[in-house]
Length: 384
Image (cartoon, rainbow, N blue to C red):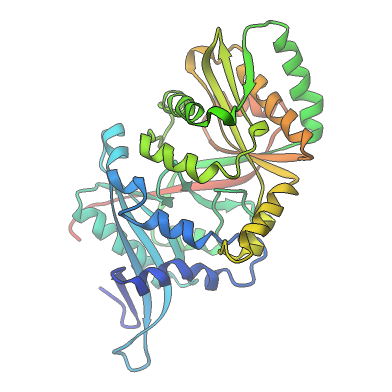
């Protein structure tokens, strides 16, 4: 039953959507580690008519508002949440799991619980048996709640939140489903371990590695799509990306991709793996403060050009070729390109906590866990 001082309502108007997008600027005011999202990109992602995610999903957005002093007029927005039914996920995993995402709340358990309860009710009404999150919108976008590693800003396309959110979610009864870890690797590790191991692998002459060819970008995107949907298919929470989603991601990233930070592994001319990394543009995004114009794009461009760190978004090798050393050669090619442009360290994220096939090689080259993210879940029983 709604508490007397808080109203939860779905986003229905342009003003509601503006409030949904704008809320984090108040939540994170004064937090030096928060990286503002680009408002235009977020608006596009949320748009049910424009972003391809919505072609296979149903989504509802909710706002929490405190009631005005008179009790009849809505007051300030104090929280938001999205309830998500990703039909592609449920079809792929043969389950009825709904998600919540884009969660933001003032540090008030009543507000957080009302938001989460609204998402639960909506998901239950749409036939779901379990709720997981945060997922904004899926494992192909931003995923997980930061639970350890609050002392530095997030890398590109990674999440960030106040410590209080851990208590808010767990205070509502959500429990851990899976942890995701982010590794940190330094230039010293790369030079003393990665390059040495790569030299040994190259002597076997079993795998070739090449960099991204921007002149045939469309074809390269198709290779990435095929490798991604094959190499990750057994991962927990994985959802294959549709052609439209791959096209959208390629369009979004094309202007910031550095060909020296993307590489393909090939065996007898057949692509068997790839690695993709982006320079860390945190400083530029913070200065842009969510806007590309009039000067935001200049801040971001300058941040990319001066980046000293990178994020390895994804590295995958087809299952039948995982003992060929292809992963080491991909890392070597990536970090050779990074060193060439003055990048000295980087994040490799994210990795499922129980993915030993990925974690052991990372730790063997000196990478260490420095941030942890969590996916929570809750069973949905009874009536809304």
